[in-house]
Length: 213
Image (cartoon, rainbow, N blue to C red; front, side):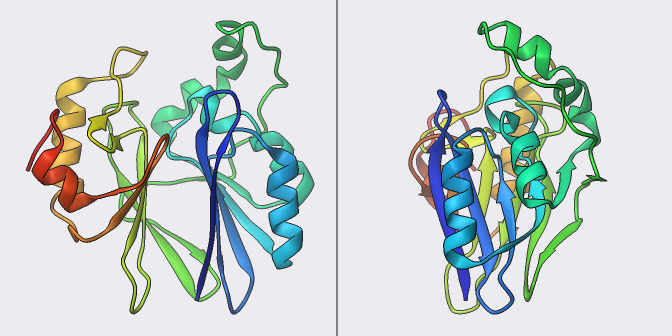
């Protein structure tokens, strides 16, 4: 059994998710953009052990609470190397919104396409989907007897796609990533985007106004 809690975190309501193996209680935190108290409550209520903190990309709203989660619960900080310039530049990102933040902690593991993040008897497959940022990642989690989950970050939304007008963004690359690396997968898979409601790969392949299969 896979345990999953998804909730909007921080002022930008990034979808933060905690997933865990129901048998071993090994957990992964995806995109901790805030709500450190809620994260702590979920970890405590299920008696979880955080093995990794993984990021779909390194924009401020997806990494804002990474330091706090790491210091409170442990786990390897994981990121694609191509987004390191954004991760290390968290203070510059924060200054754009008048925020003050602490420097980031070092990345423990760099993730690449085809890598696997293990949580007990379950695992998340890493899919590199550049475009929104150079190091954008999606994470595919298969559930025996249930629908596959795809944590898509800001690459793909319900009836929309990630913006590409920020540093490192590229619209043509984004479209290629979605068509060739997402729409070629299990179209019944449930997509948990970085913001907003869930969808499925099939629904977006048929009806997304920005990029169709």
